[in-house]
Length: 424
Ligand code: HAM
Image 1 (cartoon, rainbow, N blue to C red):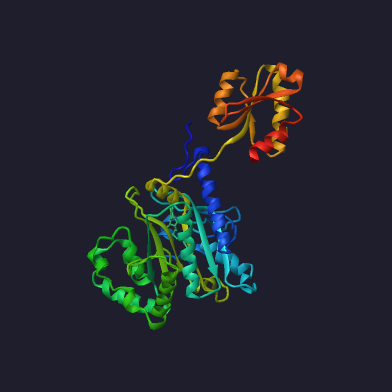
Image 2: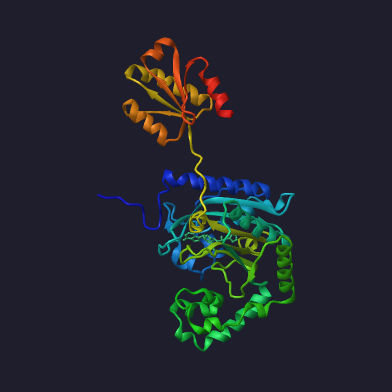
């Protein structure tokens, strides 16, 4: 039987995983600069949590969730996104009572959506996301957007476009919704069955339907921008002015609707504009979700956040020709000559590691020449040679690979000498 990685998932092999670690380090450092703290929530939650927050009429809930009944007969779902869990945790742990609001949180972890696999679209993918909960200040919208842009900048990406829209408050959305129903109602027969059922339940979803996206009625649909009430419009103006002040360029796109139901006011996406990037250009998506905490039984706690997948970030780096430099090196590779040298070699290896020196040796009994080749491939800065003579004398041969020099060093002084030269 031949086992393969499940469709839409991937193994991250050591030749790639170091890049992931690097991105995660940059994420942690950037979040620290903005005072966002890490939260880790479970990878599955009660199905109802996603139905209530992400929304019953969304593709995510209707078609893409990995839902199962557990042995206690409860319906559980592998998280398709992180916001619902974070807001659930915020409410459950009464973070609204903490003195310093808003609560600024971030997470990095796998999400699961049963989607059609293509470049940049997976069934298990890793999202880095942030959520700032407990403030309705437009400045925090700008901060969250700035943080996302900052992470991309720190990994070296430049070909980016920030697209912004306002989805307005409930009153504006209701007015727009009524206009959409009136617009589509007499022509709904020409739309897919999903759109037919969306018409009364959630007509906004028709606008991002993957099946009907080329129907001209979508392009001519009433724009939300024309239905924003004064409060929503002025909130949006404030967000834009904070972005202007921070020197963050953006374009406003009145057609930007997000694929999840909890959004209102600010909505944004960051796209790659690199020529080499595939069909899916969205790197990051986010927005404001005032009312979400109340929806799941909490107090009023307006929030905003975003999520980006590490997979697409790395694809964008590739498309732009930006690469991390590979700094993975070994401080020492121990080459043993003959069987008698193996035990002293292993003992020394452990002493080096305990002293904080990155070291390795051969475990396949190869000849000296093959061991030296390994040392080269592993980019060892030093090679230690141990043979019968060295053991008798209580010394080792220390070879500096960059300089090509070799000297005899007493085993007792070796650690100190290496530490000095590696720090230098
Ligand atoms: P989303 O737009 O569904 O938003 O996903 C955000 C990002 O996750 C996308 O822009 C993309 O980078 C990545 N992503 C989504 N699906 C896939 C996939 N199948 N394969 C690879 N990457 C994918 C959310 O998830 C919201 N929770 C974001 C948010 C946080 N809004 C407020 N706070």
